Length: 246
View 1 (cartoon, rainbow, N blue to C red):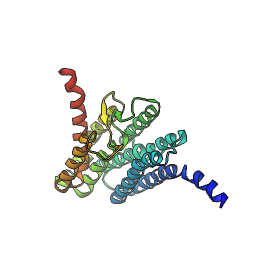
View 2 (view 1 turned 30 degrees about the vertical axis):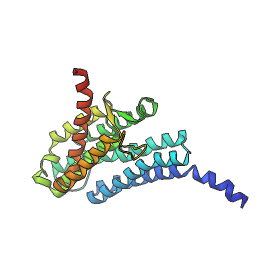
View 3 (view 1 turned 180 degrees about the horizontal axis):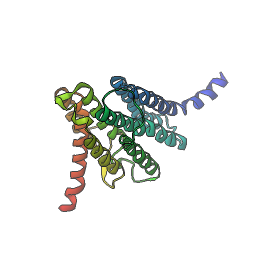
């Protein structure tokens, strides 16, 4: 019995890290799935990886067991799930646009997709050292970029609104890579979706944005993911620019 009381606190401190490792595990599986063109499987693996990423910090605060290793582990998991995997999705879309579906191989013209991965890694390293990013982000967060890329992947797979050809267009994808690589490390404040409480006060923008997403989802289907991220970016840019002009 004494051993049990000693063991339980030790086990408790590892629960958030186990959730973070689940994020890393699911992201690694998603990386394999996307190379095989299993886009629906990739979607669900990233969905649960994102859920794990959203939960680990809240669980750590609830259990009061946050640690430095947890913070570092979180970034390592994120660089795979929300850095490498979206880069791989864009890489596959570029290959499909240039050569059609088939075996995935190395291509220099598709390789720029991994610039997004590189800038995601740089952003995550900066995030760990930036003490300003407590209740908001500076630059767009890597999961938000992943949501946008997943929307492109689903739009290609289901050919929403006849946009199949657009989302595998080389120059369109290059523009996406350049824009989000810049935005990941831009000095632009952006609100986060990490709720400290579920009260309306202080969370108005978050609730309204989530409501908007669920309204768009039945109409835009999987494309709603990309559209919602664009709206998120636009709202934050306006909140950043308009006060300067006032």
